[in-house]
Image (tube, rainbow, N blue to C red):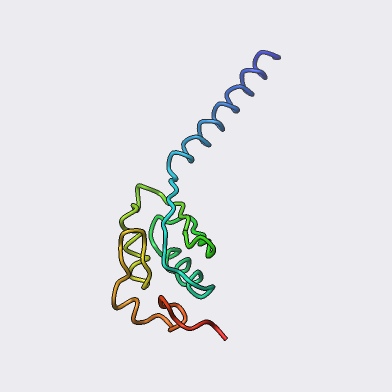
Length: 117
């Protein structure tokens, strides 16, 4: 009886360990430098990334202007993430902001724009 219990517990621990490792293998993280300026920029970028297929989480650090994105590499990739940020009107590393997206930004969110009042 004792051997069965130990065997069962060992199998359970191994099963949970393998499941946790498999989940880690599915998720990747990337840090992308942006041209974000203010809290409105942060909200816009994070909201647009939330609707991108495969994005699990995004967080923009305004101080460093770097967005950290956790994503499923089977559903999206770094180039698609950068394209999403660009279409929102912001630079994403070497990818420059899309002109149409940039034109839609409020003046305070544009490079050299006015500050919020």
